[in-house]
Length: 291
Ligand SMILES: C[S@@+](CC[C@H](N)C(=O)[O-])C[C@H]1O[C@@H](n2cnc3c(N)ncnc32)[C@H](O)[C@@H]1O
Image (cartoon, rainbow, N blue to C red; front, side):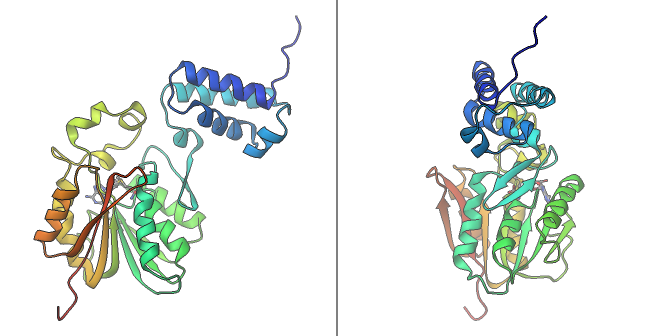
């Protein structure tokens, strides 16, 4: 029996892409490339500049396994165990929400409003993988952070990410139910990306989300607003006078979330849109002393 022709990078990429297309995976070209890069230990540049490089049989077998998992709708981030967010790379798994580009709006707002050398204290409620607060701390060397998370498994991922990024000396990662474990600590900035999907909507989401993301990270109750109802007073309690908050919202929740913060006494409440031009972040300020 003659041996099968050796696999090359370009052949492997093409056949991987075809398999993903046939399975109606949403972004077959990119996913095939990312899975090939990981399976064969090559970079995007290698695939383009050295397309006839052979891949070893065990690398081809690994790619096969990754493709089967992707076709079963496991997200690429879970298969690879990592995801890029803003300018950092994070470890991720089934215990944390895979960080979304949508959440980079909060990072952008904080970085734009605070110059690089300024010292400030920031709190991230529902820290998950650590994406938002770690991206900010990485670019603001004088900042210190606290991240709070209810899920111990998610907290372990955040701790690992903080250590990998060399940021563990500037962040305390604590288990807790929002701010209930904080005594009289206060912050200049509070950020949160709470669960905000309506419970009934979760089953209608794509399998990558409904079958692989933690429910605790998604489920915002009947109208999606349960977490904000609890958070508005808590955020204003732990903010210093004049401090700023930014919370991520669902695209149709701006009016409701703005109303909750205004009713609680927040000032300058406004909504920022994301790159897809959808309402994404509600921000505001806690009244300064003497105002
Ligand atoms: C939408 S995810 C956001 C994760 C991360 N901040 C991000 O943006 O990728 C919401 C996070 O809030 C956490 N969470 C849910 N309820 C919580 C509570 N009562 N107290 C603290 N964290 C909570 C979830 O476990 C989850 O990690």
